[in-house]
Length: 410
Image 1 (cartoon, one colour):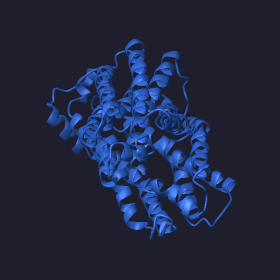
Image 2 (cartoon, helix red, strand yellow; image 1 turned 120 degrees about the horizontal axis):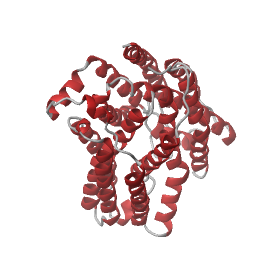
Image 3 (cartoon, rainbow, N blue to C red; image 1 turned 90 degrees about the vertical axis):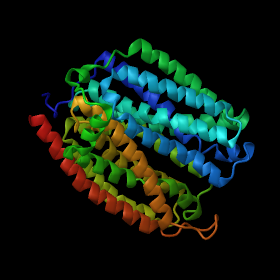
Image 4 (cartoon, rainbow, N blue to C red; image 1 turned 30 degrees about the vertical axis):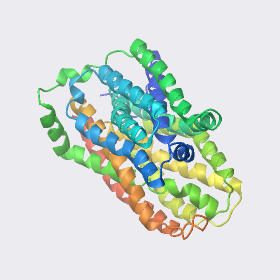
């Protein structure tokens, strides 16, 4: 077992794999996130009601989560590269259908197809990272791939909006398809087969493999931690409303805040990854959690402050939240044995998506507005709920950490 306190350098091949997988994640995340910003164009062009648009957005989440669990039964039986190519190809086809959609029903069907393949693509990417990078490299590797989220905010969404506004919303999806096809060919040419897990593969049928993955007590602890952390992100969708209606920033200020926050990720996440590989991952998680518990109530009670103050607070809050998620993802990838890792990561990813959706539903029952122009009420109360989830997460991740250490000692 490698010394988990000494960070090993990446090989040339590992660097190539990380770059390709990060770009792949960028396309998958962008496809999911860009639908909301261009929603005002979609609803007018396709004559979609707000309720129908809500179904279009949520259909991706639920199809991704559902098929992620279904796929867990058989995903460990094959070369990870082949699994990735299959589902990423399906994702490209689904996104192409989105680009060609000309009605509510065709767009809804396209989003369901894209979700089915996109969700498993994302979880398979994280599984490959877990397989190809040692535990003392995994913090940096996970943080690098997760920077795709920041890149989608800084580059992807503004570009997608520009194309939708100046050409047509269909071309936004065509852009994602074109980029994805290029990445697909790079994966075919550069990624080697990922088959190490097949050496310990069992002959369980898919349903039995799924059941054994779900009933494992160590896995259940990891799943519980993933759910609580996912639900703890419930504040994010309401931040822009809070900043405009409560802090009285302008609509033009909000993109600046998100772009600066996203740009900070290119510095914050590699730093967090290095620290979590050099030092104890749980200690980094704990420091981030304590900082989260302090800053969230402060943020939700903000009075009217200048833009520069909001920028500093937003970047700081993002930094402490990411200092939890990076180390946790690295720890979470170490719970399952290689033969079960694909199933575990697929279920974990699905539960995270479901938890995120459930968290938003709970949050929407806590905060409210009298009118679209009025202040967001009960936002401080939502902050305290987030703090409660953060405290509970510390307990669950401490148990995950014990499991990881026990596995390393075997």
